[in-house]
Length: 379
Image (spheres, one colour):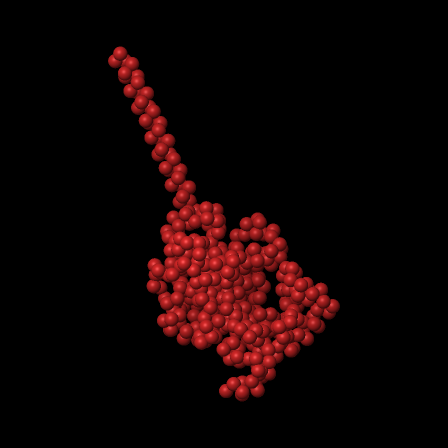
């Protein structure tokens, strides 16, 4: 009788040991799974969100899926201050890159140059930046070159914007890891800053206390004297990585680009400045030679009819150069003809060019003197 009770007690203890071991191992497995770094932590998938929060020590401010419910409560009061981290996305525009480094260096503590090893169409390309660095001409600048680790599906996609979006999303995650409390600007290489105007603007608390805003720029083609729009260029963000706003961007997996569908939170909360705010830079689109312009447009997706028509035009070089000489739209689109003196608003185009000599431009692009009469009228 006593032996039977003893055997029964031993079986119960063995059962409890097995159950306890199972529970402990399960908890250890769960802890491992929830703290290890996701394979692609900048993914927009909700399944990664909890992991990112734990890995990065982040906590979402806005649990609502509606970005306009986010009211900024809990944002840390970090200011947008200079010097900044200048993140530059570049393809093969080495002349513009070198000019930008010299133009921006007085307000920048670190240049991060992002260059893909793929063309816009997904074809392999050499690293133009590393070739330029090897010449020794950039030794005076604090530079880091960054290459985006595209997935296989991103590599083979026929949609050029897939790689553009993946690049910006990865940059957001990468910044959060390397510069967790800094003022950062992110832009294409041909988006140049007016360093003096930016320094002056950030002395305004209405701007410096924002977690993010989009830099208002003059929108130019070919050189300093061809405005292509009656509105400003507003696509280059400047932001503070110590703000809860930026952490929310990383958690959501949004790319740092104005797009209401793909990036609703960013688009709703990183403001475009109104026209009372000064112009803070220049977007110098197609400020390059004819051959480089042709190479650039040939790398685009030809889904848009105006791109297809230009690529396949008879004597495309002559057509491009005729349009450049008259400040016409490169693609001949209706509504993009040369802006007349009567249409010019100094809040959009104020006849000001970068003060640094050597601005890249097409050799046939008109000079600022074509606006002499307009400047006299606007005095």
